Length: 311
Ligand SMILES: C[S@@+](CC[C@H](N)C(=O)[O-])C[C@H]1O[C@@H](n2cnc3c(N)ncnc32)[C@H](O)[C@@H]1O
Image (cartoon, rainbow, N blue to C red; front, side, top):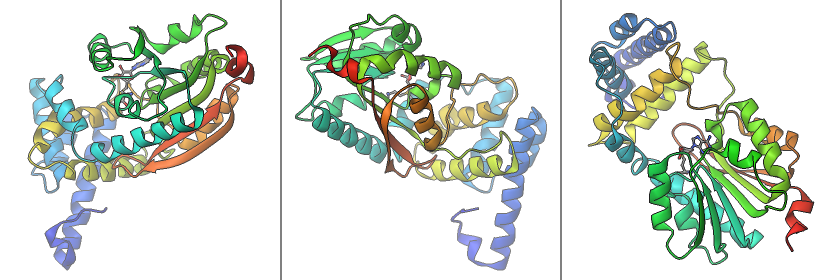
């Protein structure tokens, strides 16, 4: 494990690091088995940011009071590695606009617009922007921030939106940042197939996660190392971020029956999937090293008839 702990340099320190690693692995294994008591026992006493956070979270699970803290997500998204991540994403999107010089843009799952808005400051940003976002609150925030643009805001998921596109609808650029992973893989296949004839350039930003069998020793090791890294990016607000966001997300990935919210995959599989839907000229560029996994930009060309139909 890559813990940076003061006692690591000594023989005793190495032994302690290995012991903590075993505790975390045992806790994650117990969570995957749905055995919260065993998980609690494994991390009792803490020892690293992750064991401490998990121990606290598992105590709170018993009282059922840790979920639904918007302040925690805000602290998470506005701090740590997200600052550099979003800077890299908006720069990359600006470069896509510079190359494509779009008149129209579709943003799928725009959220509150935090990736879109700075990108639109690029000199070649389009005037007409269509937003597709199922969260009314996030969509409202994005729309209010886009004063001066010609906005078509759709309060919906992308599935019905893409399926009902009029035949002559074209978006010179269609972008989606960290949102297409919210669709199950087979649903995403259908959405991409529905979109391909309506898109000039597709720009997708996601994380290049490793392909590991669920809850396998390699998967548990990946989760332990990544969350340990993620937590150390937060300091004074670490407890808020951990208890209100990161620990529920971690345990939600493992505990049987938890509602699944993400269907991530390696960048190579994203490239295969957009190709399968009919996109061409697929290019994947590594964007930013992030604690979870490296972020990448995938660009691809949609149907050439779609790209020229409106001209
Ligand atoms: C991690 S956020 C990313 C938001 C924004 N694109 C960004 O980069 O900050 C994922 C977004 O996907 C949206 N989303 C969830 N399900 C969706 C769906 N079926 N169609 C479109 N967007 C969806 C969520 O509401 C959320 O705003």
